[in-house]
Each structure stands twice: as structure tokens, then as C-alpha cells.
Amino acid sequence: MPQKVIITATLKPMLRRKQDRTVAVIATFVAVMMLSCRPGGAFQEFRHIEARGWARDSALVFTFETRVPLRGDVFFDLRNRGNYPFQNLWIALQTVFPDGHSKTDTLQLPLRNGAGGWTGTGIGDLFDNSILYRENMYFMPGQYRFIIRHRMPVSLLQGINDAGIHIRQN
Image 1 (spheres, one colour):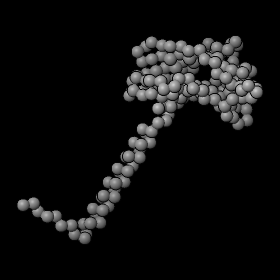
Image 2 (tube, helix red, strand yellow):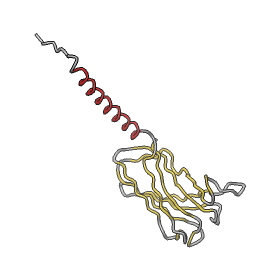
Image 3 (cartoon, one colour):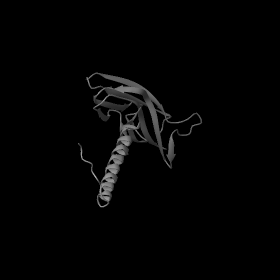
């Protein structure tokens, strides 16, 4: 016949503290898991462009790696100064996939609106734009490279401060 365990008054506070600690550990673990699994940024990286300008033959390379399949929206991020001399920015964006094949897209990124004002948000002389490149892109596990070159009609492009890529996980 199983024995009954009788908890005396002196053992109850010790068990309650242990239960409280266990609940606190579990609650912390659940909170961390919820924050790390929420939809959001899977990747974000910027490159600063030298003040003298962005050379036409200079590539910006971003490397992204995922260990699990995921879907996400890919954005091209750009920070331009008020002295940028054009209304848009033409870029060649090459994506190199984990299996080695690549795809290059030529994109026109509008930086001025129809009234001639800068697009994006800005304070002072800097304007930030986040432009959707690819929606709901599937990423199989592996390493991806995004290689960006400007395709403007000048060899040294003035007025671009920073450029980057970010992936928002769906």
C-alpha cells in the first residue's frame, strides 16, 4: 500500500519558493521563445558609402544565412542626402543562392515624388527609404549573397550615404 506524504508547515514555504522559481524560469523561457519566434527582422545590414561617392565599379555585398526554411519580404534600404542630383536610383541587384546559381534584377528606385520632394522619412538633410524588392520570398536553408551596384550615368555617384538590405520574416 502506498504511503501518504504529509507536508508539515515548515516544508510548505520551501516547496512554494521552489514552485515560484520553477514558474519564473518557465515564464522567462516562454517569453524568450515568443520574442525570438515572432515575425520580424530575420536580417538587416547596412553599408556606409564614402563621402567622396559610390564608384560605379564598387559592389556592396551582403551575406545572409538561414539554417531553417523561411519566407520573408526583402527590402532595399537607402539613406540619401539632400544633394543627391537625380530623381531616382538605378541599381543592379544580384542574388546568389545556396546552390550557386544567381539572378540579377535591374531596379529603379524613386527618391523624389511627383512634386519634386524627397520620398521616405527624413530629418534635416538625410532621407531614409525602405523599398520592397521581393514579397514573400522563400529561403531554403543555406547562404545567400546580395550584390548591389549602382547603374547611374556617372562613374562616381554623389549623395548616397548608406545602403542596405533587410528581410522581414513572414
